[in-house]
Length: 166
Image 1 (spheres, one colour):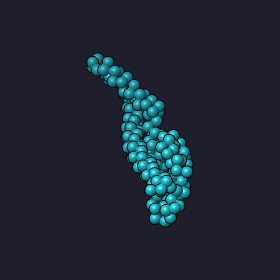
Image 2 (cartoon, one colour):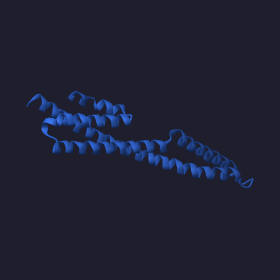
Image 3 (cartoon, helix red, strand yellow):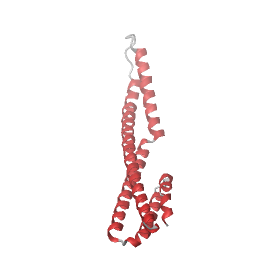
Image 4 (cartoon, helix red, strand yellow):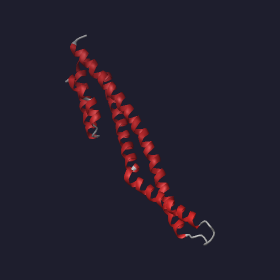
């Protein structure tokens, strides 16, 4: 096998490897997004329910001498504290924003995977073997710029081996 053919095969293998890693990372981000969505929904519902219930617990006062006055005050304090904690967690941890970010990044990575896969197949079907090297370089540049657009240093590092094919 000539050096050019070996270099072309290595470039193609690297593109396949990166495409597979992109697909795996997209699946991981999709699962993470699903988890964030569930947490966001839970804390949103909890905040709404506890936020509505807390004033009712605070304003209602059982009849004096019934023996439940102290317990009622403790319950009102606990419900109010849970409402405040739920609202704080929802605001500080921003599960909704994290869900949106993970979901959009996952979709972008899935799109990048599909694009790499399609371009690889186009090269194999339409390009003369002596022009493979240039085609792999073009695929690399496109993938590297998309990964940079995603601002993911992890993917920029993984695409470094492709630069050796130039």
